Image 1: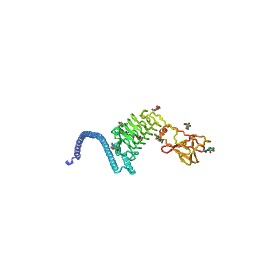
Image 2 (image 1 turned 30 degrees about the vertical axis):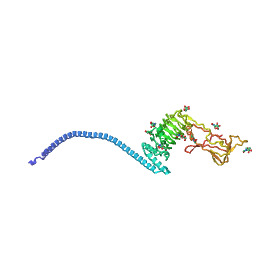
Image 3 (image 1 turned 120 degrees about the vertical axis):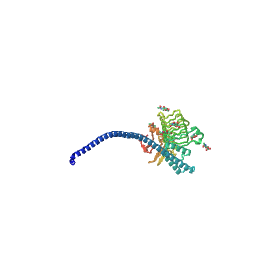
Image 4 (image 1 turned 90 degrees about the vertical axis):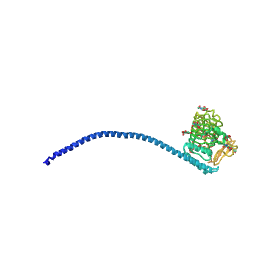
Length: 403
Ligand SMILES: *[C@@H]1O[C@H](CO)[C@@H](O)[C@H](O)[C@H]1NC(C)=O
Ligand SMILES: *[C@@H]1O[C@H](CO)[C@@H](O)[C@H](O)[C@H]1NC(C)=O
Ligand SMILES: *[C@@H]1O[C@H](CO)[C@@H](O)[C@H](O)[C@H]1NC(C)=O
Ligand SMILES: *[C@@H]1O[C@H](CO)[C@@H](O)[C@H](O)[C@H]1NC(C)=O
Ligand SMILES: *[C@@H]1O[C@H](CO)[C@@H](O)[C@H](O)[C@H]1NC(C)=O
Ligand SMILES: *[C@@H]1O[C@H](CO)[C@@H](O)[C@H](O)[C@H]1NC(C)=O
Ligand SMILES: *[C@@H]1O[C@H](CO)[C@@H](O)[C@H](O)[C@H]1NC(C)=O
Ligand SMILES: *[C@@H]1O[C@H](CO)[C@@H](O)[C@H](O)[C@H]1NC(C)=O
């Protein structure tokens, strides 16, 4: 009969046991869950905190590392540049020294081209410090007196100042420098305390250049751009600044001894007194205060009326003749005389004269110049006036009233 125990009870017991067990387990589970939940929260929080701190730390560290590595990169770059500069410089000095030693005193055209190419290429690559050193090397090697052309070379910012004062350089006279540096880039270059004789800086770009305490003898700066150049305490004699731009140049305490040429020179706002300028040639120039010193020109044409000849049948100088043009004496009995001689030409003939206005460019550019062309013409003769600018372009053919 046991066997007839309703299985359901057992089942239900078992069921309940299972249920109880389950229940217990569930309770346990529940507790466990709650406990672990708490633990997990703490874990999660601390787990979060650590990465957070790590995160913040990493961010800070990353920033610092970036900064350091950026500095390191810069340092490396600087060292690389420096090494590269040093290599280029050393190679240049080595090559050129060897080359000069091999040559005799005479440099052929090919030698000059070689030196020019090497030098200009090196100057393009080098930093200011090395370029200054290269310049001093050329000076020591006596290659700056026109041995080869440095035209267009980049010598901006070089420091070619002397440690000695120019007066002491004078004692060792043959150590004075005759620089031949026309059409060179010398902006902000310093030649302070140098003794310069028979040097040429014509057409060079020399804004902000420094000639403080220099002695300048027979040196030319024709057509150079020298804005804000400094000539403080300089002593100069026979210096040619014609056509130069000396705007805001500083001549404080400079001694302008002999005749200094300021023809067509722009001295606007330059620091120079009229006392300093007393021995100077100031023609067609703009003075510091903006006023112009006008050159009174009687006639810019040479032999304009044929009167410069001794005899009216002399050769015609000053003019380019095409065809048949002759000088003739006026007929005493019939002609209205304008002097002794006149020009007479066959039909189709021409006489031309080109007038260089280089000494008037400052006046022209500032609209300070007017011209007056007057001609006595026989019928059938024409006068033509053509203006040509520095690029050889015809700028205007004015049809003024001719007399
Ligand atoms: C001019 O040269 C001096 C060194 O002689 C340098 O310190 C300065 O930075 C240069 N100025 C310019 C504008 O390059
Ligand atoms: C200057 O030149 C003379 C003669 O040319 C020479 O005897 C003398 O040693 C030179 N002086 C210097 C400092 O180079
Ligand atoms: C010019 O050179 C002198 C001498 O080296 C220096 O004392 C002066 O500051 C320089 N002037 C300018 C404007 O750079
Ligand atoms: C400058 O040149 C003139 C003319 O050539 C000459 O008489 C004079 O002695 C020279 N001055 C100097 C300091 O060399
Ligand atoms: C400018 O300066 C010159 C020379 O110092 C002087 O003769 C002239 O009168 C001045 N011009 C003006 C407008 O101040
Ligand atoms: C000057 O003109 C007169 C009149 O036309 C002429 O007779 C004479 O030959 C001329 N004299 C000369 C030198 O041409
Ligand atoms: C310009 O002036 C100078 C004097 O400074 C003179 O020697 C030169 O012949 C003149 N040039 C022309 C083309 O008139
Ligand atoms: C131009 O020159 C002529 C000849 O010298 C002169 O008679 C005339 O007055 C001048 N004209 C002007 C506007 O200066």
